Image (cartoon, rainbow, N blue to C red; front, side):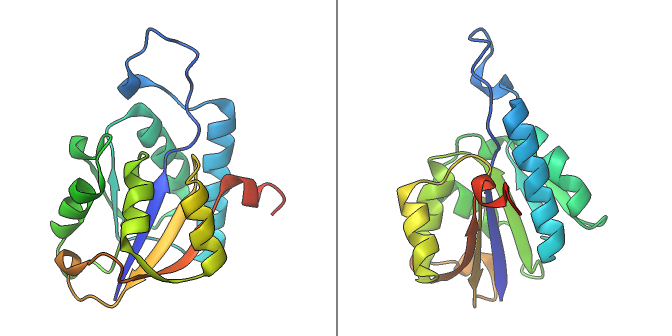
Length: 173
């Protein structure tokens, strides 16, 4: 079985229009949301074996804030190919993982993460699936599972949606 966590970076700032998109940082709200997501991950015992993270400043800052919730031995790979990657590119990167890796988290961007979640989704919590179809907001986390033995075997429409959590869901938790 494979567990896939798709985490969209937390809310980023548009206040400095001179910054390149790659260099946009998190807002105060984004930092707070990422910290809340870290608490959720820790509370729920969700810890990937490998984290694949985009090179964008906002994704790396999101990773920095959730890092304390992850096990010390988690392998982190910062990969420029994830910056604004589409579903096919993300699946390709997942396909490069060793078959022995039981779980992976992708910290990336929309529309790629949302499109990937919708592409892979085959079964699961109906309300959560509707939420993803409506919007995969900044800071949100989808957890999907697959019976596949290899990461290369992830097929469209075959994964089970275990949960979809948005920062808004964690405000009163």
